Structure formats: C-alpha cells, structure tokens
Amino acid sequence: MSFLPYAAAAWLFLVGLWGVVSSTNLVRAVLSLTVVQSSTYLVLLGIGFRSGAKAPVVADIPQSSRLVDPVVQVLVLTDVVIEATVTALLLALVVQAHKRFGSLDPADLRILRD
Amino acid sequence: MSALQTTALIAVVAAGTAVVLTPEALRQTMVLGIFGLTLTILFFTFQAPDVALSEIVVSGVGLPLIILAALRKIRSQERDRQAEERDS
Amino acid sequence: MTRRARLALFALAGPAFAAVLVIGLHGLPTFGDYHGVYGLLVNRIEPRLRHATDIVTALNFDIRAFDTLGEEFILFTSVSGVALLLRRLRVADEHAERSRGTEDHRFAGASAGVRMSSLLLIPLLIALGGYVVLHGALTPGGGFQGGVVMAAGPLAVLVAGRYLIMKHLAPEWLLEAADSAGAAGYVLMGVGGLIFTGVLLKNFLPLGTPGELLSAGMMPLNSIAVGLEVTGAFLLVWTEFLDQALITTGGEEG
Image (cartoon, rainbow over all chains, first blue to last red; front, side, top):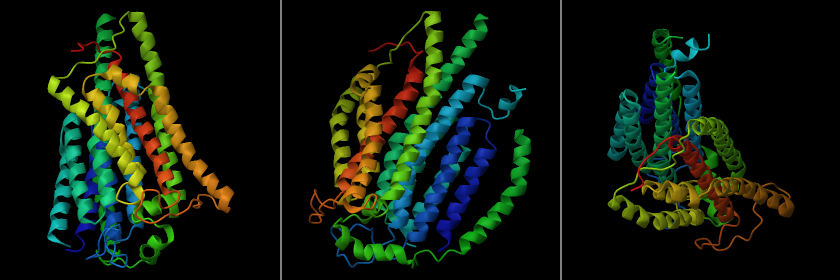
C-alpha cells in the first residue's frame, strides 16, 4: 500500500509514453507528453513526504513542528510553470511542421521530404 | 497513506489514462484540465500548497489556452491550403 | 518509421522498461519515511536565518536562488523560441494576405453575460496576482504562481471578445519589455549581492521582522522580478499564437 504513489507514477509514465508512441496526430503526442511530465512530479513529491507532518509554511504553526521536505517542492514548483512554456515551444514546432508538410501525421512527415 | 491520499492517487491515475485514450485533440484539452485539477488535489494531500497553487494556475489557465490557440491556427492553415488547392 | 513499427518496438521495449522502473522505484525509502538531512536542516534553521515564514519561497528565491536563475532562463529561452518560430510564419502570412487583398482582423463577439463577468474579473485577477507575488515570503505563493494569475487579467479582456482592446492594453513591445525587465532584474539583484557581500545572489538587504510585508531581505524583490517575467512570458506566448490564429479570420464584432 505504501508503494502506491510510485506505482501510480510508473503507470502514468508508461501510459503517457504509449500515447506518444501510438499517436497519429502530433498535437495528441504533445498532450500525452504532459502526462509523462506529471509522473515525475509524483515521484519527487512522494519522496519528500513524511507521515503526520505538515506543510512547510510556519506562519501560524510553531516553528518546531514536524514538516515535510521543502526542497523537492521547490523543484516541482518551478518545473510546473516551465513545462507549460516548453509545451508551447513544441506546439509552435507542430504548427510550423503543419505549414510545411500539410499534415499532422508523424508518418507523413517523412514522405514529403523525399 | 491516508484515505484521502489514496483516493486522490486513484483519481489522478484514472484522469491520466483518460487523457491518453481520448480520441480528438480538442476533447483531450478539456480532459487535460480535469487531470490538472486532480493533480492539484493530490498535491494538497501531499502537504504541498505552493505546488498545488502553481499547478492549478497553469493547468487551468496557461496550458489549455496555448493548446486551443494552436489548434485554431492549424485549422485556419488547413482552410487556406484547401482554398489554394481549389484555386489552382 | 511507420506506426506499426513503432508499436512493435514499444511492445518489446515497454515491458522491459516497466520492469526496470518498478525495481528501481522499490529502492526508494518507504513512502512517508523521509530521513534526508538537508531538507530537515533547512526546516529547522531557516525561519531564524532568513525571517521568512514560507520555507519553500525562501529556498526558491534566497537559499537556492541560483537554481531559480537557471529555471528562469529556460522560461525566457523557450518563449524566445516560440516568438521566433511564429513571427516568421506571420510575416509570410501577411504577405500572402496582402497579395490576396483581404485583411480582416476582427474577432467574434461574446454574449453580454460573458462580457460583464469578464469585466468584473479583470481588476480582481490583477489584484490577486499582485497579492500572491508580494506575499511570497509570508504565505504560499511567490513569483511563479502570481505571475500566471496576473497574466490572466488581460486575458479576460480577450474572453469578452475584445481582442483588439487586449492588443492595446498589452501591446507587444510592453510584453517584451516586461519579460526582459524581469529576467534582467533578477540578475541585477544577484549582482547587487556580488557587490555588497562578495557572493552572487546572497542577501544584502535588511531582514526585518518575520510576518511583515517588507521582510526577508531580497525575497520580495526577486519575487517581483520573476512575477514580471512570467506575466510577460505567458502573455507573449498567447498573443503570438492568437495573432497567428486571428489574422485570417473575418467575423462580426458584436
């Protein structure tokens, strides 16, 4: 039961990867990549959790109480915002590819180059 | 592992699988919004309020709009291409 | 490679990778039993050292500010990439449009209900975004979260169907200036640390009392710089994509 967060992260990674591999539409591949990214957030936050501990904000709780690890939260926090912009870059590439090749199918991109 | 965390994890796994299995790109965007919401609840149960705030803002406002604008552009490019083929 | 070949390769490699992943993840300590040293030490000493009550923001903008510098520049680079790719497309489109003779730049209108509620939302969103950015060191929040909330403000104008007004409210040169000012501001804070204390990105402002708005040294200023950059970045990405999408659409502005 305590392995459930990591098992869920592994499942999300594999499902997202399968989505990227088996997609017929480049936009769908980019969206499945978002699922893969969120599996890494799950692993990071799962590592830092301490049972019975509180959030690392000491504005209203005594400073010596038991808190979860804050370092992994820093990593995930900046990561979430930045992966959105990286997805925007990927979608700009997809738009450019559609303009040049006329189709969103990954298999068609090779044919028009020959 | 409290009951709340287990429920949130199951919801995340279900929503993630639904994102990959949805057929159209437009529908996938909406399911992606729901996936972001389940992730936010999960981050709350993991005692990470900063991360939950970041995730709900990005997956509710940031990402769906980028995807919808890209889809709109692709559709208008498709329309231009068909118009050119008809003219030539 | 064709889709069939890709699926065949995944059928072979997928289960092997899954096995390796699960075995690797088993090696991690049990869930809920974190006993690393660095995080627990920071929890213990940070409020006394940096006078900030939100430990995550203190790590982000003060103790590990160098990592945030790197992440900020990833943001800047990918937004520059989006602008580069889509602007070349837009120039080509504009040439094609002018040769064909049509140049509609209107956007379909929205109903009165949507317009009223979005008008109410605009000041709320900007105020909420500013609040989240400024109170980063005190409560959950900070530059990254507040920046995206602030970017949603001018976006509500778009939802109301007034795309051209949004272009007047947030013109492109202003967004680029905000994005660059945020990135440069963060580096300038770091250089200030270098000048006054001899270490890059070390705190050199007075710390104040924890719990007040002007406390925790350079954290609010770093937070404002990052918030400015994230707002400029998101609005720039949205207007780049939407300029693309709306340049060939003719519609009723109702």
